[in-house]
Image 1 (tube, rainbow, N blue to C red):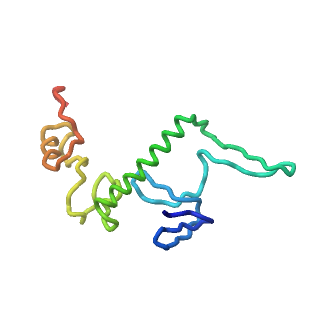
Image 2 (cartoon, rainbow, N blue to C red; image 1 turned 45 degrees about the vertical axis):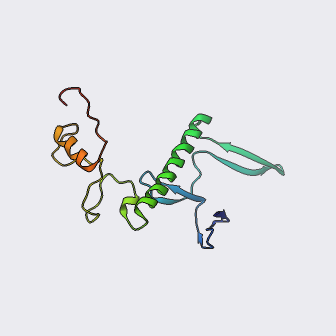
Image 3 (cartoon, one colour; image 1 turned 30 degrees about the horizontal axis):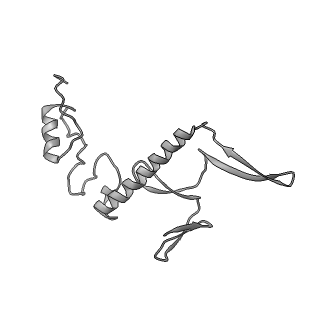
Length: 145
């Protein structure tokens, strides 16, 4: 299993990468970044009068439930990274969660992307989404949209 020690990440295969931050992060678009600023919930260790002190910093006054929610969100992001790498490999822009696939990426928009000129919820858009296998727009019997 991989380890992170003294700003170096050690892969299980022996490869090492030097980081300047404190670890890894993942953005909402699933880009992997270097995390470098503990500014949401962290611990400060120091000394006062020759005795070790610790201070927990929680500037947003997060509750235990909110911290668990942040952790769940981050875990889900990392799981999405793994799922997309398995599905698309590391050489495809589809690995990243973007609203539209860029030109040259097999020429197909993401299933959730709205076709130009089709109103959300319109029959034309529902048909276009069905053709692409999208479930992004629910067909509801609410009348005109």
